Length: 402
Ligand code: NIG
Ligand code: FE
Image (cartoon, rainbow, N blue to C red):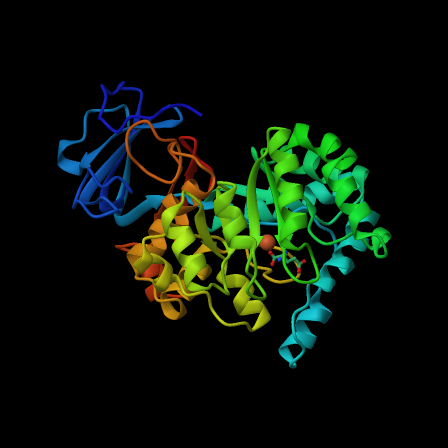
């Protein structure tokens, strides 16, 4: 990860200029209109290699060999989806159907996917990850975090991370998703495995360690033991926290300086204060509340308290089978008290903050040239026109990929 700068630099003529952009989101408040989105109207972006070399008014764009006309459309940073569970096999249509007829969501459904995932070949798991990452890319996602958590044996967790690492650098070890069914009568034995032999096998493939801190999964003491064991192996923590009920997850995440506390659906005032005071990002995953018919997380309350909020999909076959960040943006604006500007920021710069990255999630000089061209004059249309496939082109690392 390089140290980017935001000053326009000399531009090689071999660069590519995307000109005639009606509205450009840079996420650099020192640029454009001075808001957090750093909006520039009638803008251009110049891409040199895999990086942004220049941004500014279209009429001032430097001469380059290649010019692309955005046709008066909007350009935004590629979405940073900082939370997904893509290494799985099978699906849970029957469980979704039952929920939509009134059954509650229970973490125990994870066991269905564990059985299917253990039975799948490496090639099938890899094809599944590739399929959903491609699906997400078509919807503007240029960075994807993904997790293990449907293997729950030493071999199956390590294999899940190996598969994930072939598709993304943002890989999270979630051996502590639920207590393995093989250890149903010995949860302490399972925690010992997750913090011992399984951690040793998994750490080489992962950047992050995660735990599902929840009733029916892991309590606060277990979660602390798991996260600190991961830290001792060089993994950085993130936490599934306060999704289904109030609990210790959020405060533990802040105490351990986790990059992110994810879900944050049931928060006390003390939880909100903790998130506002620390560097831990509150990652909200409205696809999960949609698909489990649960109450929405309150983004407004977090933002008003001064917390940093990210928006991600939680893409997984149980609680949130969507790869669409635009869908999550629309939900967050409609039901969680976010403005369209805030939701766009959270799905780009917020996701980058949740991965502790400054080289993505913004379009200013030095950042990776990861961007989406919308078939709309402004990013506001992502929430204003829900369900409409507005992502027309996607560029990743300076190359057009969609
Ligand atoms: O983030 N909360 C725990 N894990 C997933 C759900 C996994 C599943 O139901 O398969 C989540 O929502
Ligand atoms: Fe999750």
